[in-house]
Image (tube, rainbow, N blue to C red; front, top):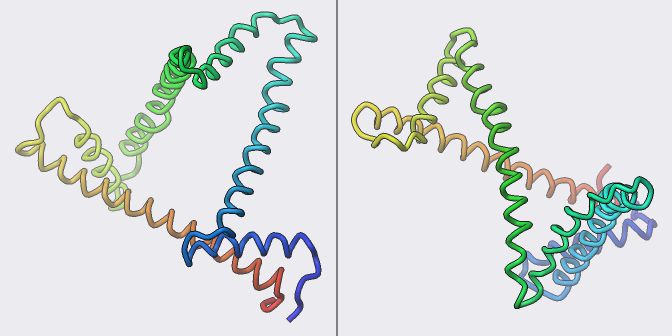
Length: 202
């Protein structure tokens, strides 16, 4: 056993144990570590936004390049803070509507081009074998399931039912991947505690 003498390793280990203390129930140690983590995360995010967004995209264009049109999106952003007032809180709808509309306008064609069209093209142009045939059937039946202009009855309903099975398999695989990712994080923390902190394992 070779216990670490690094102060930061001890601090990190203490916070790790505080977080895992939640397994025994909510307690002051867990809340302290949680609040500290949230506070540090918010502070770090604010610093990143300030130096990566505010300075290069607002201050520099205004102060050095005289690009005064930057004031318009700034005013739209300032309207977000109207949420903290009762009388003017309705003004927050303007920036939200702009962000949602712009995001949808940009994301919809990109998603169609990058996912649906490419998936269909890849499914139709691949050499036919068992794996590609299953993938092709999965793509077609899944798209048929999301075709709501026709009632899911008869032959169409049977194909849509097959699509449900493919969707459930995809959800199951996604959930399994999420669980494995969390287990990987747990293993990483255990290796840190047993190797870097306590030196029990090599």
